[in-house]
Image (tube, rainbow, N blue to C red; front, side, top):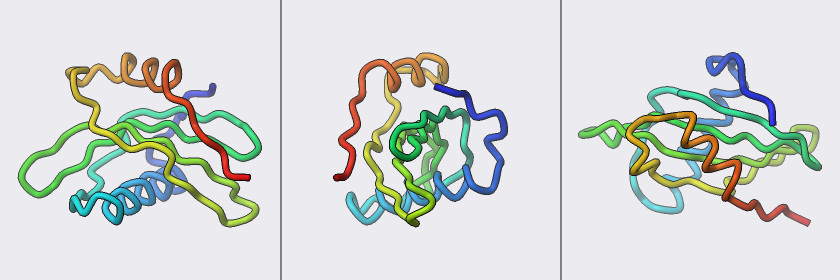
Length: 109
């Protein structure tokens, strides 16, 4: 897994906005992306982006864990995981370790 060195890269921001938008459609919770805090990528049959996001619902800003699977050459993206990063007290290293060590991603056929 490779750490994302520039969390402000336009493509990383696009992936993060996609994650928040997809979550908004699924959960009906109206979050807006504030920032990408940290992230990592892993090459599979496409690319997995594992992100720690800061997002707001208009009243509170919280951390969220998101995993997006992308096949850029096909224009394909799938939100595989999106959850509040509760219980980590903002410790991004712990969150990224938890995501990379415990979450499984189902890949599209």
